[in-house]
Amino acid sequence: MNRFSHSASSHQAIEEVFDARVRALTANRQNYSAAAHRFLSYLQTEFPQVRQLSEVRRDPHLLGWLRCLGEEDPPLSNKTRQTYLISFRRLLDDLAAQGHSLPSELILPEDFPPCPEPYPRPTRPRPKRWVARSNRPCSPFQEIFDAHIQTLATTLRPNTTGQYRRVAHRFLAYLQTEFPQLRQLSEVCRDPHLLGWLRHLSQQDPLLSNGARWRYLLCLRRLLDDFASEGQLPPGLIRPEDFPPLPQYLPRALPPEEDQRLQQELRRTDDLLSNALLLTRATGIRIGECVHLAQDCLRSVGDHQWALHVPLGKLYTERLVPVDDDVQQMVARILELRALAPSSRLKKSAGLLLPRSSNSRLYENLRRALLAAAERAGCTHRLTCHQLRHTYATEMLRLGVSLPALMKLLGHKTINMTMRYLQVTQQDLQREYHLARQNAAQRHLVPELPLPAKSLSISADLPGIRQSLAATRHLVEMYRRQVTDEKSRRKLQRLGRRLLRLVSELDQFYPPAN
Image 1 (tube, rainbow, N blue to C red):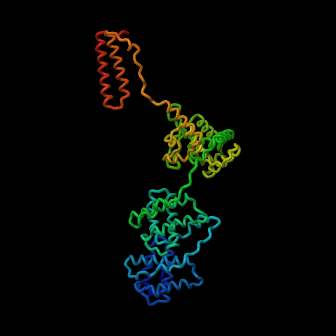
Image 2 (tube, rainbow, N blue to C red; image 1 turned 90 degrees about the vertical axis):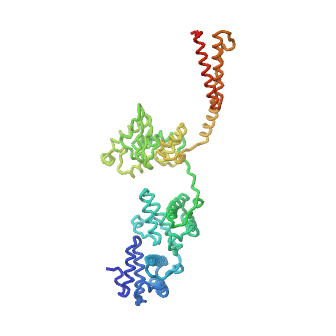
Image 3 (cartoon, helix red, strand yellow; image 1 turned 135 degrees about the horizontal axis):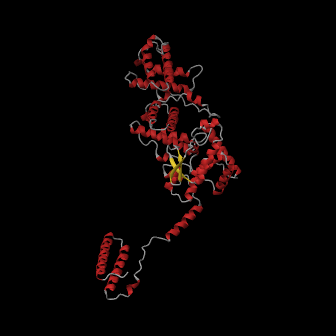
């Protein structure tokens, strides 16, 4: 049965057209259906003689309906009237694109009511079930963005796809509020639409951080560039100068004194959680990787050489971290303490190194154990588990580990990420500088080969001639090592070989004495 069957029979043709178009839509169908229902009800009451869609005119039909919306009792809010106009304009544009005979400009920009004042920000976040049920803004571009993001979702992670959806939702909500007259995606331009949205982001209350605004621009630029490559938008809507400066990321390594006191306190505590934290500090693994270590995480990689097998982690990579005897004793101690855990926890964590009732509970217990140990050790900083990883990276750098090797130890994909973990102090600079100066004093110079001791007293006999030839060959070789021209070096090398053959020929007349 037609959803508009309550209208008069004279409007059956118009109802069928609108009904077919509403069924073809995939998003916000309720908004489109409500707008069409209100308009058809108004036509049935005020203009029963209108039978075909081609008979609809702006004056008196659309203008009369607009006056009717403004005279509702109780009155409709500006936002509700704006939603009706946007939905109904979308239906009329779609029907006109399908070949239906409709006059142009039935709904004009000046028909939209003033933008409503924003609602005050709630003091508490709404429950997730309310957020999931809330309707998205009725934007004419919503389906276009949703379809494109759905295509990107085939190659992106779910969290990244969700970020694209949130940014698109926020941008389209801004366009709907500030520029409800936009009809086509090609009408979006840099000024005033994109520049206005940039100002809108910078004027949020509470203020958005530069990092959050930077992520919004990065996601939206990707979407707009994709549309520009398809010819739907002009290129360069978001430019590099639009991105705010990112805050400087400071390494969070512990001072050496506090790091030493903390490790001593964890060793003194010697329970399951403290040993897990010591293992994190000694290997530089992430706390999430420590939680998912297997019982057989120690692997033999050679004679008396062991490594810790880190499973797939944050960057979907696994690695082997070299360990010493101290780390092996930590793992052995954790296995001993694991055997004393309740059987219920052992069943839920079969095959894992750390027993737990749930991952979230284990994370929280590790965090609390670190804070308690830091307080007992007299640490002045409020610590996080990830700071142990920063401290490990800084220590490895001071011990002489190269950056490429440190990148592999930490499981990073780029050197830039590794550099963010390192803390280079003035003492490190002084040590590296003086070491470089010492190396500069020991440059590789061409060694000076000494002349034979007997070359100054040469006799006119066969042994004297042989000794002279050997000394001459020695001088030629010294000179060849100082020549930079490759062609001359080869010629001198051939000359030295000839002198060597002459010495060999003389040895046949008078063999040298032993």
